[in-house]
Length: 354
Image 1 (tube, rainbow, N blue to C red):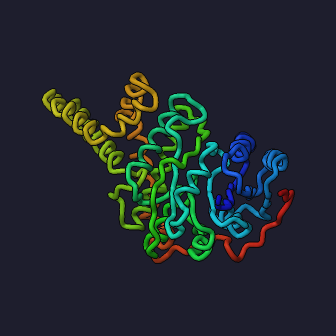
Image 2 (image 1 turned 90 degrees about the vertical axis):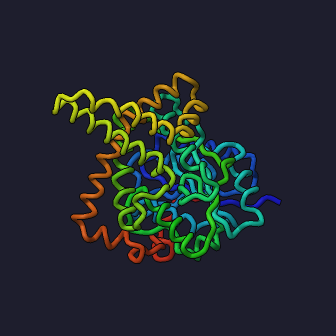
């Protein structure tokens, strides 16, 4: 017997993708589900597009953020199992079936899925990002966190947990929520068959801006959580080795130029070789996603360009953490509270359909 799912989708100005997202959900092979879209005061055509579909639309009175939107969606849900995803993610026809198989009989475990290796938009930078995230999130069966773009959790467990943290750092709410669940004794597990296809639309500059932004918030949170050097999903030990290797090679090159000593260039190939060995499984994932040409381009971009955006974001995060005491209080383990809207916020429902 199929479990009834509540697919919860927070949305803010997602008119470019929400239609495709909902089309994908309603193409599911799994028959027992409801869809709840929580619109966070969009200014575009998102609401009009959403109203075309037989889903429940909840419109918030004021801009509240994705965490609060997810919590309110869970509060409004009727399914036994919650499936959190995003307005720019496309469930595959068998995604909910895979989630049902994973969680049946194991309702005390929170399961995570990930992005497909190849995204909806198959340009280089989008495919690089999707393959990188797919590898990083699935390399460990017991992950450090489960991302909210494909999170499967028993409804009662979610409500009991307090939900995603309110008034927290952007894009890190699911990491904090996962860590809080683990500390309470809840098990986290990856189910690689639970896949969503992401719509990235990344250019060269958007790819670097995305790396900077993620690194900035990851660093702020990790400093507060005391796990800056940890191996955590996309903030992986491989990526951190890559950044250190690029920094070391850059320093050797600069010193060689400054001191006019060509001998300082000799260790650089060894630095890159060691970095490649550490990242060899990621490089194999690049090859698997796009073949030899994509692998070569991805490896060069990853080792020679991407680290600068990550490092710059890390420095910005460190500076922000050191200069803002409120961030230290907010990101410390004792300073985070769940329930960003899970019991106190009363949303304004509109356009509800079954």
